[in-house]
Length: 86
Image 1 (tube, rainbow, N blue to C red):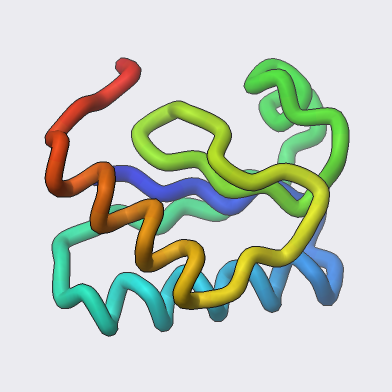
Image 2: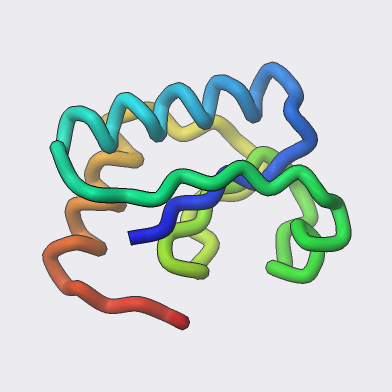
Protein backbone atom coordinates (compact mmCIF):
# COMPACT_ATOMS: atom_id res chain seq x y z
CA UNK A 1 0.00 0.00 0.00
CA UNK A 2 1.27 3.46 -0.87
CA UNK A 3 0.30 6.42 1.31
CA UNK A 4 1.21 9.92 0.18
CA UNK A 5 1.16 13.13 2.19
CA UNK A 6 0.75 16.07 -0.17
CA UNK A 7 1.83 19.48 1.04
CA UNK A 8 4.63 22.00 1.18
CA UNK A 9 5.95 20.98 4.59
CA UNK A 10 3.89 23.32 6.76
CA UNK A 11 2.94 22.51 10.35
CA UNK A 12 -0.36 20.93 9.24
CA UNK A 13 1.48 18.75 6.72
CA UNK A 14 3.86 17.57 9.43
CA UNK A 15 0.92 16.81 11.73
CA UNK A 16 -0.79 14.77 9.02
CA UNK A 17 2.44 12.87 8.42
CA UNK A 18 2.80 12.10 12.14
CA UNK A 19 -0.83 10.95 12.31
CA UNK A 20 -0.35 8.70 9.27
CA UNK A 21 2.81 7.21 10.78
CA UNK A 22 0.94 6.50 14.02
CA UNK A 23 -1.99 4.88 12.16
CA UNK A 24 0.36 2.67 10.12
CA UNK A 25 2.21 1.63 13.27
CA UNK A 26 -1.05 0.85 15.10
CA UNK A 27 -2.24 -1.34 12.23
CA UNK A 28 1.12 -3.05 11.86
CA UNK A 29 0.82 -3.11 8.07
CA UNK A 30 3.38 -2.64 5.33
CA UNK A 31 3.04 0.82 3.79
CA UNK A 32 5.23 3.01 1.69
CA UNK A 33 4.82 6.51 3.15
CA UNK A 34 5.84 9.24 0.71
CA UNK A 35 5.86 13.01 1.15
CA UNK A 36 5.01 14.96 -2.01
CA UNK A 37 6.04 18.63 -1.83
CA UNK A 38 6.18 19.59 -5.52
CA UNK A 39 3.21 21.86 -6.24
CA UNK A 40 2.85 20.69 -9.84
CA UNK A 41 2.73 17.06 -8.66
CA UNK A 42 0.17 17.98 -5.98
CA UNK A 43 -2.09 19.83 -8.44
CA UNK A 44 -1.78 17.00 -10.99
CA UNK A 45 -3.48 14.74 -8.43
CA UNK A 46 -6.46 17.10 -8.30
CA UNK A 47 -5.55 18.54 -4.91
CA UNK A 48 -6.25 22.25 -4.52
CA UNK A 49 -5.96 22.47 -0.72
CA UNK A 50 -3.22 20.98 1.41
CA UNK A 51 -2.48 18.99 3.38
CA UNK A 52 -3.88 15.99 1.61
CA UNK A 53 -3.54 12.25 1.98
CA UNK A 54 -3.78 9.67 -0.78
CA UNK A 55 -3.99 5.90 -0.49
CA UNK A 56 -2.91 3.95 -3.54
CA UNK A 57 -3.39 7.03 -5.71
CA UNK A 58 -6.86 7.95 -4.47
CA UNK A 59 -7.31 11.23 -2.57
CA UNK A 60 -8.88 10.39 0.79
CA UNK A 61 -8.36 13.63 2.77
CA UNK A 62 -7.89 17.16 1.46
CA UNK A 63 -7.47 20.52 3.15
CA UNK A 64 -7.39 19.29 6.72
CA UNK A 65 -5.48 17.19 9.22
CA UNK A 66 -7.09 13.79 9.71
CA UNK A 67 -6.54 12.16 13.07
CA UNK A 68 -4.79 8.83 13.53
CA UNK A 69 -8.07 6.94 14.07
CA UNK A 70 -9.59 8.27 10.82
CA UNK A 71 -6.45 7.39 8.88
CA UNK A 72 -6.34 3.98 10.54
CA UNK A 73 -9.92 3.33 9.39
CA UNK A 74 -9.10 4.44 5.82
CA UNK A 75 -6.04 2.20 5.67
CA UNK A 76 -7.81 -0.77 7.24
CA UNK A 77 -10.63 -0.48 4.70
CA UNK A 78 -8.12 -0.29 1.86
CA UNK A 79 -6.18 -3.29 3.16
CA UNK A 80 -9.41 -5.25 3.58
CA UNK A 81 -10.61 -4.68 0.03
CA UNK A 82 -7.17 -4.86 -1.50
CA UNK A 83 -8.35 -2.44 -4.15
CA UNK A 84 -5.99 -0.02 -5.83
CA UNK A 85 -6.67 2.78 -8.23
CA UNK A 86 -3.42 2.43 -10.10
